[in-house]
Length: 435
Image (cartoon, rainbow, N blue to C red; front, side, top):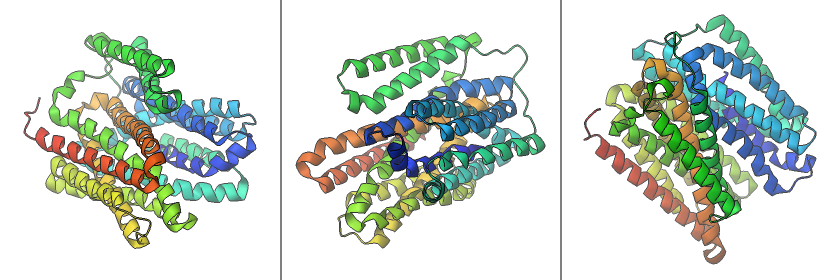
């Protein structure tokens, strides 16, 4: 329930036209409503994951729920666009607190042998909220106006606080004497924020502009300094030695790649659907997150019977089939075929999400479950940012000369190649020795 506050933010997308009209803003400015929120929670996740490991996952989770209730109220009450952006920044802090601790509460509340099943249920709930968000948001905006997409989550946060206090035991905290290294946390947060801003907004600033290059250099420098600092156990957030395990490392690389390819579906397919089947056709897009929700519980059984490698390769295969099929669509493609492809793509994505999250949570010790859950969310967000940036840049470069459908097909051929290469690397990693 508490973690659903994050994917339910997809309801805000349905309010974008109303928000721009209310604040008298150009359509281009709406991207900052997304950027401020996503960059804030993505940059803080790993630092807050470490904080949760040290001071208690339940405590950080409750703080995040309370913070979200306040921040969502401030978003709904904003009467100037700048205040809305400031409230969205606050909301990003609350989301980071929740998502940095929620997966750890799942894995640490269950016996080790039930970890995969717990992760599958968590992922199913996450996907279900993402599926419901746009539909719920559209209905709320029509009935009550844009503030309703924020107000509706305040009671969810409050009920989750009460339920957590009543039902969720506090997992064991870190050993006495462990401390939070503020300098490492600040370098990590600022490094991720500037690097993601450079990747996500390079197309707007200009890839060779001083703004983009400056952000990239600052981000790379801060992340390099953080990495060097991790060699000292006194400053350590995460044992980077775990990335010497090729299977663990490539699971995370694959997570970035698949999220990049999957976000191209959410980015470009709506425009295709309007062209091919009118405004009503956009409803088909909800089948992709529905497939995500369906694939998540199925993954638990398949992982138990066939193992992470087989499930990961099967999931990548389904995703490759889906993106390859999308690349062949014409404006005459039947709606049934489109629906089947989107559902198939979503199922592959759901299977892979659970397989990777299980590997990441299982690859780090129980004392680092907050960092493990945060790492999974960070790689997901990096993939989304890179997919949005690369997909839109490629489309914008091709479409003016070749037309919409040619650019659309090229982008999805590229997504297919990305997934196929990822599957090859994951398959090769099975031959690498465990570290």
